[in-house]
Length: 85
Image (cartoon, rainbow, N blue to C red):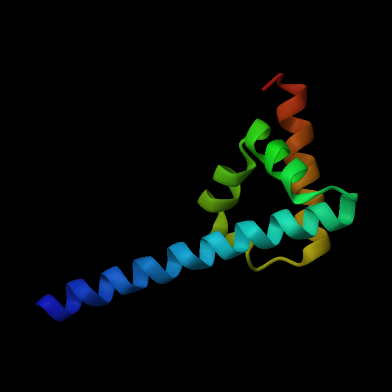
């Protein structure tokens, strides 16, 4: 029984690490594409809730390419701006 619980915890830790690395990847790639410093991207992501979005939607998003992700982030920001969020 204990082995199963430990295994599940290890899987959760790995997934959390994978999500964190994915968010960092998105920050770095978005910054590079837009000519922004990482700190500026972090502020932008915080303002529009992008870190949460990228984390919550990790499963489908992490399978996409760099350019698609940048376009998705732009679209997400524009939708949030239009809604005044």
